[in-house]
Length: 308
Image (cartoon, rainbow, N blue to C red):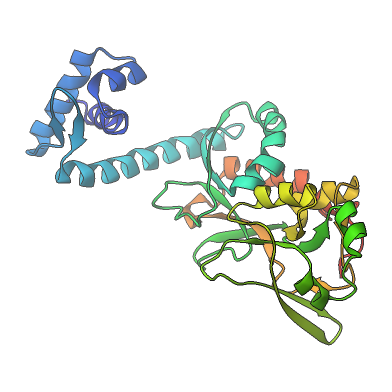
């Protein structure tokens, strides 16, 4: 029995939920793939799959083996990739996790340039606003907005993560605009849906601080929904500069209270990797690509004005 081939066949069946689709994915005859999985179960002395005419599911032993087998094959691929990279251009599969809006607005438009410069790298991108575990999700690199995470990770700062107060120019004109943060309590504001029902914004200027509970017509979990609401003139909004910088520069949104700094404005944007990815040329290629794309200062802040 070729155990590596049998492991790949088993993982394909587990991921596809069936033998026929797994065989098509691997380019094998279904009978050949079935024999490999049967041989693996015989070798291990236990059933890995529950099989019926309608479905294929994992047994408890199969669930345990799936995790270990996937890790073993990943380790093998990483070892192969490291040797190949040492002798040539960055290559291999690069698994990345990105925040959803950041992926669409900042990263996606640059993927063509990255692919052209790195034709031997295959990207597998997960878009998620959750703080994912790099080990459990078998990731090479994750981009995090704000705190980078646990101290064991290798961390590279890409850019500041700052928020600004903004609104559609027509709304500012119609409402008269706030002259100080406290005025926002009487103006329509757009907030994120959180565990609490209160939306509180905090500002600072010199030695002054201001904390205001705001209200408005829309609260949401998604930043792009709130941005669209702000563009439609539905309320004032606190939003990261990477998402609204171009809108402000091109006049669709207007900065409000520019002399006041948003407290807890976000910190920084980081690329994080596991220690065993130190020296990976494919990881370095992607992170360097992002840094060059973002620039210093960030390209999205070129037309945004002074940041206190």
